[in-house]
Length: 155
Image (cartoon, rainbow, N blue to C red):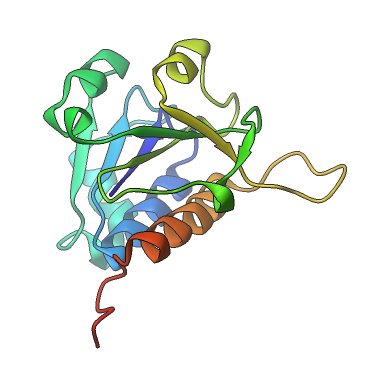
């Protein structure tokens, strides 16, 4: 299981994603360019004290992400308001990569086309979207639950 962010816009969301994935023992893929400077120093600052346990891979762009070895090992699952299937009715697998688009613009058509599934999180009528990391937390929680992959689950 992996979590991926496509060209994130908000540094605080990247920080929250770093903490989420560190706590859940899940690798995080960041697909650049980001809408903010992403340096080693800013990445360490965003990760706070979770940096030591974070498994972060930076990709220079969409093509580099698609060509990565990790991409060959599982399905690419895009979360989008344009999805047709609710995430809680989807059968997740341990090798899935859960992909979330930009906060400001979502994911472009080429990202939609590459995904093996496009899922949505049902919202109350009239609501547009959740914060991307709130959505990622919900989706990752469901995927880990279904696959029996929560860290420390055997405790």
